[in-house]
Length: 350
Image (cartoon, rainbow, N blue to C red; front, side):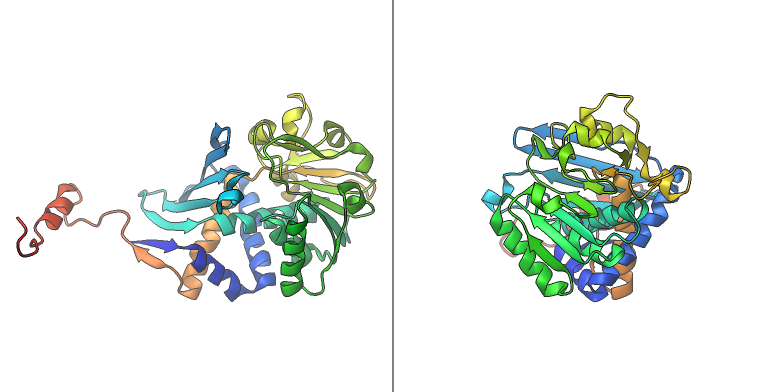
């Protein structure tokens, strides 16, 4: 039998943990898997692009577990009542192929993206960073803000979005769950990023956008660039990337999808796992500029699915469903059909 987790189930898991614990606990899972990076079978995600957006499949596996995520990105979806990003995924046993878990991953993607951002910033930002600008206040904004608040101790948040309603939504949600986080709204990106320690960009338009320009870069800043996550979609001017050291999740994928797609093939980058394992340097001084060009990678979903599996057991949450058949004779699949056919028809039916 396979465990099924709905969006309501995952929301219940989040509520059971509480806002601080959910981010710190999930971060531990993501960190543990980054530290054993070389044990994984990895590839860039498989993407199907259309004028309206993109649908992607993201697989990852170690010697025991295989995972995948199906995820879309359609910026116009909110106009029809759908989320821009929607996702589901599965965790299976490598030794048998048996599906162990099927879960929603829309809410979970926001959680794992936020903790990966915080993990990278913990390794790359200036120690003692307490202020962040959040450019793009849509569906993932609250999760980014809370992860940085609870993991790094960010207590001042500058926010800006071209949609003022999105900013008001963000302010109301954060006031309800993190009253000690001071949120200040600005009328533009340049004003919002001025003087902060960390800048996070998480915008949704599928376009070669320039959210940040080199004149906004200050010594010592850490940039957490999330919105440039598919071909033809960027947020940072190329000169921003030239101002500091660039770090990525999985280089073959980021060169195609991230802000890095603007740069020549030999532009130097460092994969984050090498910093986390001590094989490469991160920030070298307080004046360094560091850039995490994050596109989201399947290993993070693998970690999140492991966390969901363990959390479902811990809290007794989730339905048990039959996805793979349990057969008396494993070589007689047709017996499933015969068993259903043998059920007596209702009176009057042939």
